[in-house]
Image 1: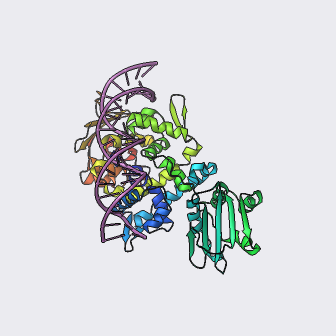
Image 2: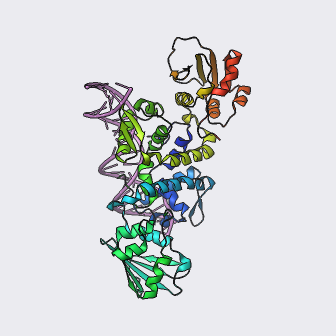
Image 3: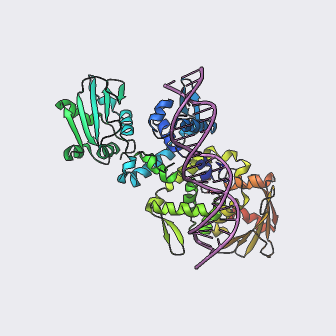
Amino acid sequence: MHSTYGQFCPVALGAEVFAERWTPLILRELLHGSHRFNDLHRGLPRISRALLAQRLAALERAGLLERRAGPEYHLTDAGEALGPVVDALGHWGYRFAATELRAEHLDAGLLMWFIRRRLRTENLPADRTVVRFQFRPPSRPPLFWLILRQPDTDLCVTDPGLDVDLYVDADLRSMAQVFLGLLSLPAALRDGGVELTGATPLRRAFPSWLGVSPFAA
Amino acid sequence: MHSTYGQFCPVALGAEVFAERWTPLILRELLHGSHRFNDLHRGLPRISRALLAQRLAALERAGLLERRAGPEYHLTDAGEALGPVVDALGHWGYRFAATELRAEHLDAGLLMWFIRRRLRTENLPADRTVVRFQFRPPSRPPLFWLILRQPDTDLCVTDPGLDVDLYVDADLRSMAQVFLGLLSLPAALRDGGVELTGATPLRRAFPSWLGVSPFAA
DNA sequence: CGGGATCCTTGACGATACTG
DNA sequence: CAGTATCGTCAAGGATCCCG
C-alpha cells in the first residue's frame, strides 16, 4: 500500500498524515505537553520504540514536527493546527465510546501517567506528600507512588523508600471513570470504588488536587 | 497488530474506529450523500471492492453505520457525530496540504464525480445540455460527458452519442484548483487553464452552475 | 448491481541487540 | 537517555474469479 490515497480532496490529504496508526495518539501527547522521546513513550506504552521513532520521523518529513536540541520534539504551526482534529476526535470518543470501557482499554500505568500530568499543582499540599496507589484487580506493576512536592512531582513504580502519607485503593475501572469525569469522586468514595487511608486533612484535600481528563465535561 | 490501542483515552478510542486506512474517506462519502455500494466506490476509486465491503462491515459492527434495504448504507447518530471530525480534518487539509497538490493526487475521474455531485442544479440550463470535458495531460478515460437535465444529471465516460453543446478543455490541475476554490474560474479562463467552446449563453452560464468543494473558503 | 471466496504478495510491525 | 540496525513473522490488502 502506498501511503497516498490518490485524491486531491482535503479530507484525503489530511487523512494521509493524520489517520495512520498511532499518529493521532502521538499528536495528542505532543499537544498535551510531552516533548521528550521517553515521555512520549510513557504515554504510548504499547508502541514499540522503533515504530515511535519512525512515526516521529514521518511527522517531521510531513512538516508537522521539528526536532530541537535536547532532543525535544515540538509541533510546527501546521502540527498545532491539527489540535482541533484531535479535540474533535476526543470529544467523539468521550461521548460515544468512553462510556463502555472494555478491560483491554484499562491500563493502570497509563492512568497514573495521565493523573500525574493533570495534577492541579496549585492545590497540592504545602509539605512533601507521598501517595501510594493500588488497584483492583492487581495491576502490573502492582503499586505506584506519587511524590508530591511543589513544584515538581514524581511518579514511581518501585518503592522509593519513603513513608506513605496517603493510601489510595481503587477499582481500576472506577478510577479511570473518575479521571474521565464519568463518575464523581464522592460517588466513588461512597460505593467503595475508591478508598482513601490516611490523615483526615490529606483525605479531604485529595479531590482538590486530583485532576480530570481534558475531555471531561 | 490488534486494532485496539489499549488506552481508555477518548482520543485513542476515537482513533480505533476513525483512524483506520480509508475510513475517513468512507465517512466523507457517506456524509456527502453517497449511500449505495457502487456510488461509494466511485468516490473511492483506489480502494478494492473487497476492502470497501470489509470496512463497511467494520463500521456496521462499530455501530456507526446501518444497512438498509436497497441495499443502502446510512450513518447512525454515532456515525453522523463523526462529521465534525471529518470537517476538521478537511479544513486542515485545505489549509495546509491542498495548496501543493502533487500529480499523484490529481484524478480526473474523481474530479468529475465530485463536480457532478456539487452541481448547483438550481442554475442549470432549462434545456438538456451536454458538456464534454477533456483534460491536459490526457486522462484515462480521456473524455467525460456531463448530461445536464433537470433535475437529474448523468456522468458518462463513453460517448453517449449526443450532440455536445459545450466543450470544456482544461489543465487537470487548474480544474482541480478551481473546484477547490483555490483558483477563480475567471482567472483560469483568462490564463488558459480552462477553455470553453460553445454558444455564448452556455459559456456565460457555466460559472453559475459549476459548484465548488464543500471545503472551499 | 453488490458483493463473497481464494490466493498470494508486500510491508508493517515486534523483538532483540547494539551504539553513542 | 535516545535512539538505530537487523531479522523474522504475520496479517492487511490487491488481484482475480465467481455468484446471485
